[in-house]
Length: 368
Image 1 (cartoon, rainbow, N blue to C red):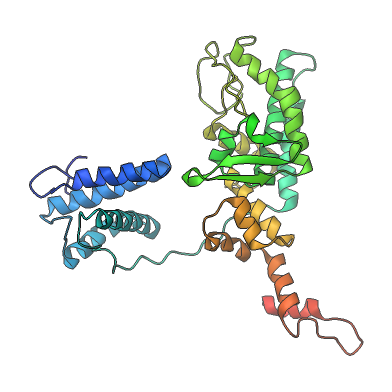
Image 2: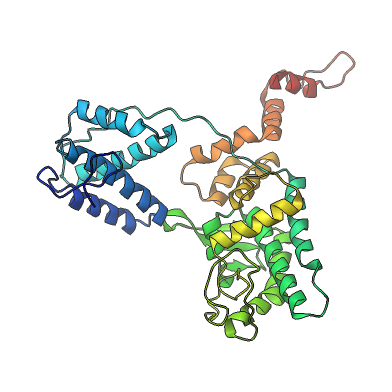
């Protein structure tokens, strides 16, 4: 960590450091031991570097900064940064001080009384069922253009089978992109329709696969993946790139590691490659910008709720630690809202004079 005067600078080891760098490193090591992701560790390190660096540059002790000093730092942090970034930095610093308090490094949390900037409520974007099917159809059509019987045709068909399996699996199981990229053959039970994944915090969960996803995976494993895996063994090579995924040289493919989804060189298809392929499919399907693997996860949850699934079941399948995280999907599920209103409101099913139920009109009124 290096010293600096601005809120983005790192802490120094000068006279005002007082062990800040060592305490921050111990905290990050504790997070790493708990299974925090690389992205979380990077974000927290940035927050700590900026905070302790600012305090050191302005003559404050990180163990007991005054309320005025903390507010001054917050003011400098807010300059040129969005409320979401400020909130993330504050969350990281509060977590750091909770750790430091438990370890008897500080007497208390000087940030505890600071209000978190109010965040704008953003609902997740989801695809309709028809749009999801268009995305799958676009993947199926990807390999149709190459001349039949050629090595190029075999490769393009293998990539198309893989892409169909990716979309079907992401949508059927609600996987995060990291979970999708790390999926192994051994973690999928096609007979039972189950997939075992390790999510955030190294927590393992079981998600489910419907018949279309199981069928797509079976065809890919039997017919598509062997074509791609042979590239890693050196049976076939080509210099061009069918994926947007960077990897080893075409003549230096690694041995098959058992990862489910492979790129055109036979190596594991990484998160960047999955995003690139999905964006190609999005364009081919005529869908708007912004469709990502996480959009399929959002769509998975929303369509389950639309179909009447219990919120806690969706929480379990998504791997959310808190039910509050899952509840966001109730706000993008109009069918669930309508069904809940119709089933719960005492006059939602009031009979009209001619004996017909006017539940639909009551629900319409509620939506205005």
